[in-house]
Image (cartoon, rainbow, N blue to C red; front, side, top):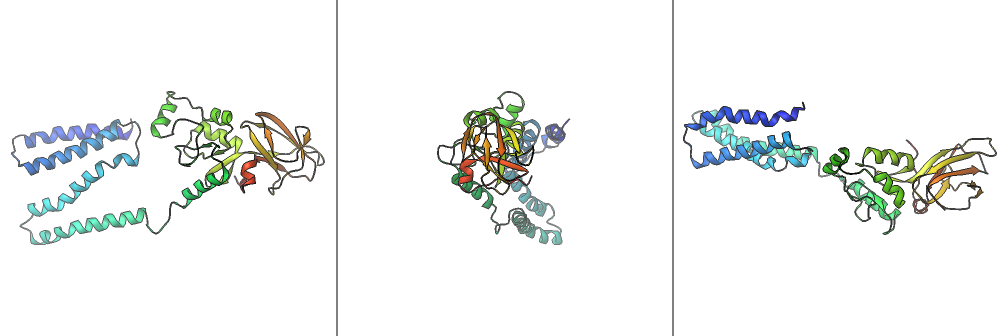
Length: 297
């Protein structure tokens, strides 16, 4: 049994245990509001951790203000209980500023304001805009590339992923990439099947972006080395040497003189000049706009 399943039963047992203590004890309206605050915060937190199917840090946000009110009230409650102890009573008023300073230190430690953590996201969006036109599709998890349409309808949030895992929604990302010829993807947070397909049919270019392409090893005699490959994402491709220069050779039996539309299916490229160990078939539009594959993987 998962550890989080016991949260709500423990909370229920605590309530049953303390109920007799309050049953015959009168209390004023302020005490009643405090008890209600504890019950609301405790019920939300324990029910969330026990019954909610997908958990994230954002789910804790509603209970954090309530918890902070409870924490802030502790010094004042203690000051009333221990008012006869001068030393402790003198210390308690400083506890609230100390808690505030501790929280500020924690915030600065986790998210230092002098560091620009949006640089990568901005660079990603800028690369998408530079590599694509308005009519081009880009596959990402939730539309985070902002300015381009996606080939797959569902945003891959937590609930969507759970429904896909349970077979309630079809995992058709790979099929949609092939059907639409989507040449630019951001694999982060996509399904495992989609990421496997992307690793086979796309090449990384940096900033978590991948473009349609494959690295193809050449085989055969030095004067007539060739590579056979299968295209799954039909679009316009160019063929490059390891130093990112246009390769010289024959593509499917005809001289390769520049970018060419390649249909889905098998293709053959034969090198006619030099003897590189491999060549790269790469999305021509991306290459023409200054991008090159990163093969350090």
